[in-house]
Image (tube, rainbow, N blue to C red; front, side, top):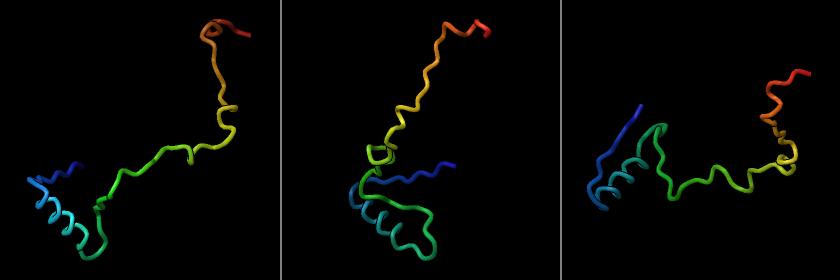
Length: 64
């Protein structure tokens, strides 16, 4: 589902954002002040790179 909002100027933006924040009940929409960091150094597990296994394309046709 795609929902769009047409906002003409900064005043429109402030009014819309205020309206979203003041909704009664459980909000279905949240406006963040900045973009959240989903991936970053804090989410990496130490030692994970050592567990990566590489595959060689030359071995595809060989049966052992």
